[in-house]
Length: 222
Image (cartoon, rainbow, N blue to C red; front, side, top):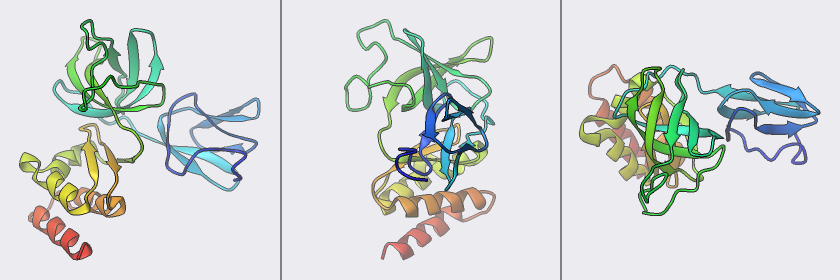
């Protein structure tokens, strides 16, 4: 596929309604309208020679109050944002009524929220219709996202964040883990960070995993 047909990068995050390309065939989870290929779902772009498709983020996560999640800003309704957190239920991010408005990121500045943007946020409550109410968005810029089975996330984090700290320290990567199964990675040896996370996911049921991951990372960073 030529650069004239799409500006997307392979595995770039896309959102429902986003124009992905022109002049090519639609693959899975896309449709064609007026010569443009449009995404039906949130997910990762899969760019082929003659077509573009989307690998969806499947909604297997059940939201719980207190969880920290990563999501895609899908729609701006004025004082409310709809956020895809890979759940059957869309997250609701309301404009705060105090001087912080929509919250501030960890560097103390007002986050720049826009459709298609990625945020780390906290579920403050889940209402009677199962919609998660979100607070304190923190924008995640650049980097990229991988998807992990939400049930394996506790092992990726580890007791007292022991596993996560090992990955961050030994790969020198910035890693933000969402309890909904999305993990954002930026800088450092990102390929090695992904390799470690995939090994944790595959061996989550085994004993001695923290030591094995630490040894593997040590061997590959010598």
